[in-house]
Amino acid sequence: MIRSAIVRIVCVCAQFHRAVIVAGAVLMAVAAIFDVTRFSINTDVERLIAQDLPWHERQIAFTQTFPQKGISAVVTAPTPENAEQATDALAQSLKKNPNLFPRVAQPDSGDFFDRNQLLLASTSVVRRTVAGLIQAEPVLSELSRDTTLRGVMNVLSFAAGEVRRGRLKLDQLKWPLTLAAETLNDVLSGKPATFSWKELLQGHHSSADERRHFLEIEPRLDFTKLQPGSVADRGIHQVAAQLDLKQRFGAIVKLTGQVPMDDQQFSVIRDSALRDTITAALGACPVSSGKAG
Picture 1 (spheres, rainbow, N blue to C red):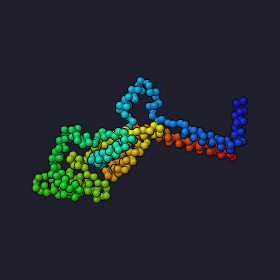
Picture 2: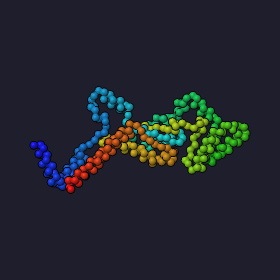
Picture 3: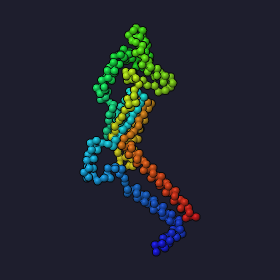
Picture 4: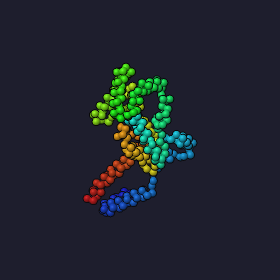
């Protein structure tokens, strides 16, 4: 009985295939409209678990005290000074939009470190820095009168005169002249040129860690979207582009953290849904064509 009913249904569909295709398309459109107007999404995974469970209540309290859903912006630049200036500029601009970025923190740079950085350094680093400042005092005094490239050339001439007078040793100018030569070579080659006073005082090139700073950003998430942090992610990149950090400081901004990683996972779902829909539509076309023939 069931078999005969199925056969009759198939025969009717084959006989009125055009009407069946139109009816199916109409039903699919109605279902799509119903889904769009009636269904919503909440991509907050914590809402998938009952809120009154003891262990989940403790987890929620911990998350509220120590927010985990944040964005870490990694700012890298050719020199420590450029990295710090780019990070400061980005932080100040993001703080102007508290509706999208309620909290912006600089865990390894900013005013606090500008005032107290030597207090956090090791004794050997402090001694080396102070010794470098004392040694460079005549040069810094001369440069303070003219901070342009012309001033740098005047400083080099001044240093050469100090060597002739016996007040400076030629070996003491080896590192400053090396840095100056590298900068001038970049200028003459048409490359972006930078000069680091920190490297001058340290007596060596800075490490990758010194040329990198972080911003801890707490964004306002929209859990009605498949990617809750997409607006915040785009906002950070837009601010970085508006500030022209690449051109001004040679800085590159990259995003990591819980929010970008979650958005990346949800983007996989979005891409697979689109792919599966297209596959299903393409698979239905041959069937419809066969029925029509």
